[in-house]
Amino acid sequence: MSGPARWSPARPYPGGPETFAFTPAYREQAEKHIRKYPPGRQASAVKALLDLAMRQMEEETGARWLPRAAMEHVADILEMPRIRVYEVASFYTMFKTRPVGRHHLQVCTTTPCWLRGSDAVLAACRKAAGNVPDGEISADGMFSVEEVECLGACVNAPVLWVGDGFYEDLDGPATERILEALRRGERPPYGSAIGRMGSAPEGGPTTLTDLPTPPEKTPAE
Image 1 (cartoon, one colour):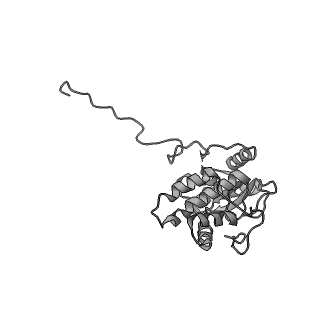
Image 2 (cartoon, one colour):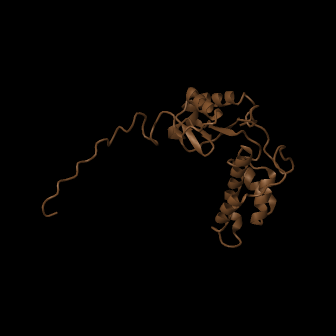
Image 3 (cartoon, one colour):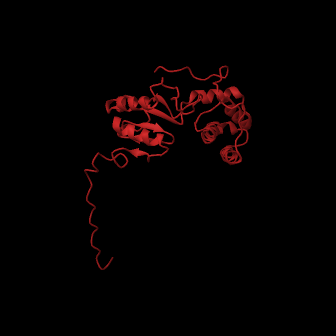
């Protein structure tokens, strides 16, 4: 999978804040996560705090990503070497260590999604982003696109991950409708584009559709 080089501490991306600190509300959430671990083991909360930092960045800037200043703030709170936090943030792909669009479109193109038409989903996402290279941000700042590996929702393929949820059972036109709604500032409900409930078969369940009749009770019962 080709794409721009990932962030490194020696090459910070432009546009991020020079300083970062949790707001009181986010700091309170951070402390709750830290208290889950015994004294001296607070580094175990690093992923939770990095996620909080990304969410605060989204509230403040409109984009959910981790600037260097945010990673260093997390390291200082957890009394960790900063390089250890850089390592965690650059290892887990859910942490975005470079700027992303207001809506970061993560398209699964692994075999089950590809067999079900993820090429059309990816094409719709790239078109909405103005066909900028994957990993770059559209001119209006709304979208960035990334191909990702299996998201674990193969039975509802193809799948698009935006924000905190999946859009499932997609095709090209359904993806375009979702992206148009996002551009208007709406948030279409997550889930199946065809109304499928969970992972039930298309059209609804085909077995065990009749509820059993409870046996009649005898007077002794």
